[in-house]
Image (cartoon, rainbow, N blue to C red):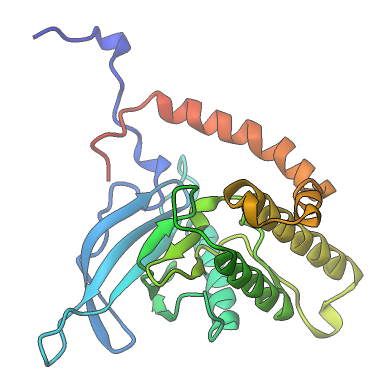
Length: 263
């Protein structure tokens, strides 16, 4: 069997590239008064681990409900403690979920797990893409969903990623991953700059909404829809300038390692 020279063989990635290091997801967890058992891993990257869990069958023998566990960064990075960051991000996302409970299109929050984790309802469906049976009604529901968020003074922020917008098995839109969403504080702390930032971020939500709608279902779009899909705000331009180099650098780092057999 021919083997690559050692200098060209990809190495296993170091533990510090993952939110939980080499640790596997917990075999079972307890939340909302139920025991959930590990089913499979969705993703484990620098910032978080996400996995699918299933509750024990009910008394009638029916399959238990499924849920998603998300654990934020807890493993040190090059010797520097990172659990504080995981707690901060997890606390922020939990507060967003709690503020949005009852909104159609937001998964039900099921409880906190440890210092940096939480559990939410699993939504069966697919990432948003062009081959789905999309309809004007789907985008009308998604528009309503964004209006609901903004009415609660929350900007989603991450709608540029289609994988964060699910086409549910029910044919309805669902939003997941509120890690970088922005909540405008009420009262005296909701000062001018905070309100300005909220308006800009909400405007970015609408830019991405119309971009997705005009690209995925152009036949249902009006001239105004196409115009709004071209209105990139200043914050969007700044984000692209900062994020693009970081994404390319991350891809270069990961390309040096063998990720095939990592968890």
